[in-house]
Length: 372
Ligand SMILES: *Cc1c(COP(=O)(O)O)cnc(C)c1O
Image 1 (cartoon, rainbow, N blue to C red):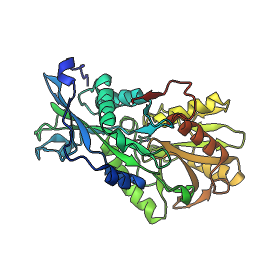
Image 2: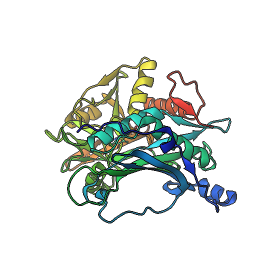
Image 3: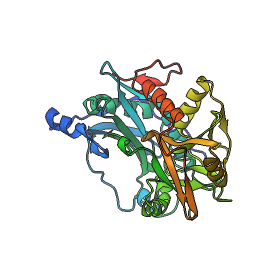
Image 4: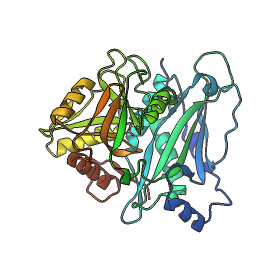
């Protein structure tokens, strides 16, 4: 469907800031930030912008974080018109705060909105909401030794109407939480369940949109994986159940004996265009590694793991950054990758990326955006 650019004037979307009067005291905040885990320790504020058909985006606000008031007939609750983004704010050695490729998140959010027949959030408005919220809640960005501030922009259809149609009212909201390590570092590489029963996305489906529905559909596989002692799930293509696609929320990469880095291509329209994926491919090319975006079959993976041709496999995404995979399990057995430990290419790519994100290394591609 064609979603025309809404008419939005500057004054409509200038953020009105209402500070929380009883903000979390510094000592309490520091205690919460010492070991935040993931997705539990939220900042004091949130950004909310409303869209109404015919009026465009309006009533931009930063206000104390609070529950939403929704009509029980709001279409998000029935037909899952919902999309989201995941990005991070990093504390640099000089104590300032920066974002990593936020423009890429803004662009992908537009793509997701288009696929789900939702209003388009202009990229400037997206970036403004994120920047203003992080500025106001800057003290919640953990020390780099501890972690990052995870930012969750999302959009929901709020129109109260049970008829099946694209909604005419939306809310664009940004919340943020402190994030420690997504997977415990001490635990070493993760184990992955190869899902043969269900699929994450199919051609023509919503695989390239970052929508909640994709995640809901991946949860039974995650449960099944957990029953088999696995941390994560690998999804295969819907047609042949043979080609590696991605994990539930991370892209997947392989490193071969000859140093080649390979990842499944995006042309199937079923794999999410990960910003971490793209950044790692760029960094690998910068280092002169051979990079292949080619499909790879699960039976090839088992064979290459056994022969020793496949040296390393890792998952990548904003939340978990680069996560080494030590073993694959499936109904038929599985395999161990390398010696089951974190590989050299995996750790050096991870370090190169994190050094740029945290401002410890030069940023030759202009990826970081300082926000104060
Ligand atoms: C968000 C996401 C990723 C990773 O994308 P990044 O931009 O690297 O965070 C990968 N797969 C899925 C399904 C996702 O939702």
